[in-house]
Image (tube, rainbow, N blue to C red; front, side, top):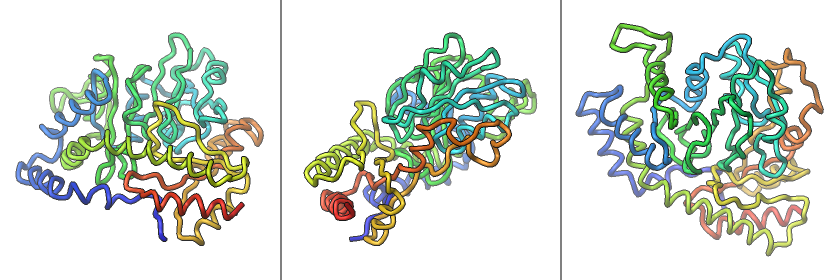
Length: 355
């Protein structure tokens, strides 16, 4: 049995006619940038996410970048975040000339430890950026008046924004994925959302009159049209991921897999963009699964503070032990909505045979 990590063709098969029609409608309209498809998606995502404003942008990375730009974060400023995430989380901070300051993660959730984050704040801290990693909602840090901007790239549908704003990614493998790059910024703050709208279009309003120096962070109309078709399936797809996660827990319990393999506990706000186990012999287990044609992935093999590009920050091995341990042990198993019970049983049986 061959099992991919993600099977996008299965998700799209039942929607093919609607997707083709949505793309054709954009082509026929001649409106490829902005327009009713983008504004329609923004309204629909805002409703699903229980948030006042949604601003479509060009990618999840640009969603994080533009939130920092909207706060005028730059050289001399610090942003506290996790050392264990996709690179964009810290990369966007550095791109603006600000300093990423890391705090360790919680070993059970893999999310930024809110107490550690608060302790890492200084008088130069302009924002704290927790990440809802793998689709599990992070605990909100108590940092007073410091802005909290959430990296929710993997976590659409986990609840309303609790900080100033949140950034979404619609990368194809996300729970709601486009046919290329796309993203969005969510916020209940009208003034902040309007500033993001201005920045995504070179700071121009009206056209050719620039109040700010922004960038080209616009969302393509074709991607918006595709996302509007798929948005109607998001609730069902999320429910399927949660069922698959619960089935994994039951199958692992029945297989009596040793306790050294740690299966993620459930959380009511976890949408399982990834189902990530911990295994001290992770690399050997992954090789064993590869031989059985079961695809896996390591999200993420090296924490930020040990990346070459951040060596100048002065962190060393042992600075964040929970993040370092996670990087050596995490392994994502297939959990996509169309994954069958037989496929899951094969995954678990193969893992049990390893032990």
